[in-house]
Image: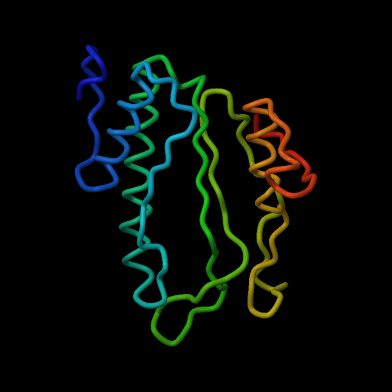
Length: 171
């Protein structure tokens, strides 16, 4: 695809998410100086038939992120880009009666980029210690936002987050 006058060698997956990743790459490669690009992959609200749906969605996510990384590296933007996933809710630990799971309170998130320090932040979830059937989160999601705002953008996060939240050591 074209980015300004640059032709990308990166091949993007077909489909809506692949197209969104391609567009995000073009925006980042442009000269507009955009600070944030949001890309959405819908369908994780899996109250029934979860296994097949999640297999398809995680494959789509993985292929899209691999292409995104390749495009950012190709354009020389991998070290200046931070990619973070987020979701408005998690899933419950126990399967419901229709081969799915219902809304839960904890979730896993992914952060990637050339300057990201790899590793796991927080404790691995316990399937034996649940609160009301929900996984117990060990990192407040607002700490992820505080980390991005303070360590990546260099701005105070307290007013945006309505309080002070600790930062994590991923950047």
